[in-house]
Amino acid sequence: METTSVAQVFLLALLTAVATGIGALPFLFVKGLTRRWLGVSNALASGLMLAASFGLIYEGVAYGLWRALLGVVLGLSFIVLTRTLIQHEEHPVVFAQMGGFDARKALLIVGVMTLHSFTEGVGIGVSFGGGEAFGLFISLALAVHNIPEGLAISLVLVPRGVGVGRAVLWSIFSSVPQPLMAIPAFLFVEIFQPFLPVGLGFAGGAMIWMVFSELVPDALEETSANLVAVVVTFAVAAMVAFQFLIR
Ligand SMILES: [Zn+2]
Image (cartoon, protein in one colour):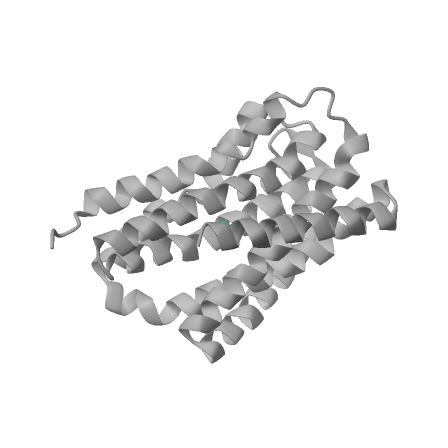
């Protein structure tokens, strides 16, 4: 069996990061996306992220039930604390050319998505420890998995006035931890592996909180509860089917 080089792992993990940017591309064809669409966009992002977070927790408990559940509690505590800190910030938050309320929200969402990529980077590195073919499979699956996540990020950014080019860059940015974490995890598999279920639970916990604290209330402000529920249901079903197909 050929040995996998560090450069190979890095390049594949970099590919997964770039794939996230593809999720922003549908906005090239959507003209006149105004705040009116914010409700539907937020509902769509809610469903995609909700299903993704359940996927993370399921994967975590498969590695280790209690460590994954500990991760959920840690992720939840972390995000609640972070939000409190952002809200008590005295200087106005400016992020991606947005100010005030929108900037805080966008910062939180891009932040959580970036955070969850650290664990996925570890996942790539550890998977290469199980052989080159397995690592390759996990990298490709993750690259495809990243596309709807880029879409979810762009659904939050673009209707708030961020250009498509910048949405592509922020989407890719959110996955930059994947190549960065894949290398140490690949080199030191034994050290990283026990923390993988904790990281997966952490990411899932933080994402579920974000859906119900930020995205759903936003969606409800702009559109009816009925429409929000319909869009979330379809988005969850689509994401679950998608995750099943790329397995
Ligand atoms: Zn992900």
